[in-house]
Amino acid sequence: MSTYTTDVPVRFRDIDAMGHVNNAVYATYLEQARTDYFRDVLEADLSAVATVLASVSIQFRRPVELTDGAVTVEIDVPELGRSSVPMTYEIRARGEVVAEAESVQVAVDDGSSRPIPDEYREAIETYHGI
Image (tube, rainbow, N blue to C red; front, side):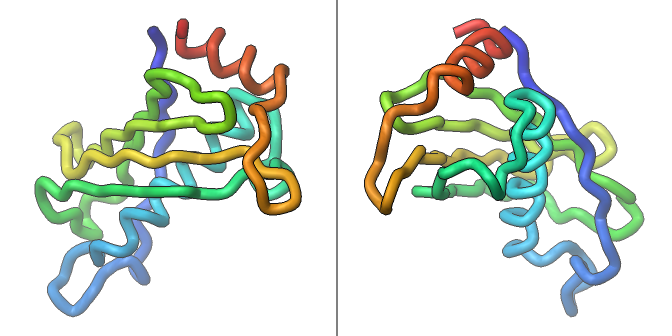
């Protein structure tokens, strides 16, 4: 089973009044990682693929600071639904897990769920060995 890994820079604007990355920004890191995943694994622009984010959940382990420079986001797809792509994530800074997350992307057509296109299903299954 393969996981997908990408780095996302920590920007000055990510830092809040407490001096660390604001909790809401972690969702942006996940979004950037999904964008990279769609580009690299599915050879598709996420904005051009008819999917919606149905859910996201993040468990925070420790704060990320500007001095961390970047976070590494690891994505796994443990299984596929008919129309859904559940993803699990580990976010690391300096090699240490700082957050774990889960999300579900759903393929849509005119606002209703639809089957994941065969070419995307095959690419995901091949990449992750599912």
